[in-house]
Amino acid sequence: DSGVTQTPKHLITATGQRVTLRCSPRSGDLSVYWYQQSLDQGLQFLIQYYNGEERAKGNILERFSAQQFPDLHSELNLSSLELGDSALYFCASSVTRPEGIGETQYFGPGTRLLVL
Amino acid sequence: GEDVEQSLFLSVREGDSSVINCTYTDSSSTYLYWYKQEPGAGLQLLTYIFSNMDMKQDQRLTVLLNKKDKHLSLRIADTQTGDSAIYFCAEKLSAGNNRKLIWGLGTSLAVNP
Image (cartoon, rainbow over all chains, first blue to last red; front, side):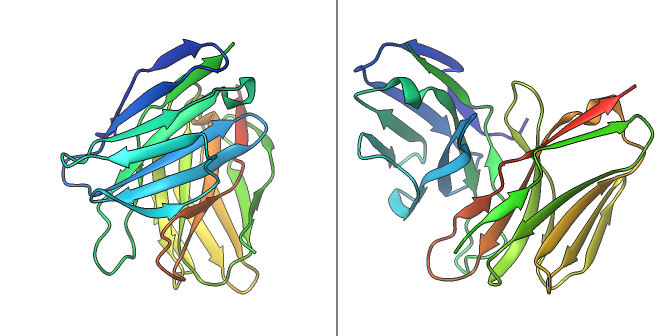
């Protein structure tokens, strides 16, 4: 158990819909990262938040957005869903020391999204 | 550019050693990681190595880093069926304020009894 929790574990929805995935980081971790894992693309970094602010952006579509709340939990919002958005979505957290090196990312169990 | 490459599949017999290889392109990498993903589960950090180290050993795991060739390997001694999983290599870049990891596609390790 990494200490990172994600809900829901599974989500089935239809094209065009919008869903929200939730992540609670490990106690004390200030950074939250979101990843998408699909069979054809592998593990793709989407976005990182640090202490409530966006820190880094990866291959995140404009239809997707995220935020980190004052209690440090994070939500990933996926809208206008397409079949190709079906994937495992992982959240990870890390301490992110001010010097910015060495922090290890601890992953949650993932949310499996199926778009029909 | 930023790229991490791994072979996609590896099959070994139980009790043998497994060696999973990874190459990366960015010489500014500071840390390199190995993560394990068991079927239906999240990613679990196995081990990591600083870029100024050549080798790190942790029980059955040995990580070798050849910084000149930008080659990283993970050796699992006495491989067990419970080691069957996908193993991801990731590099952490030091440049700029972007602290993302660059990930390989993962190597699927099958351990045959």
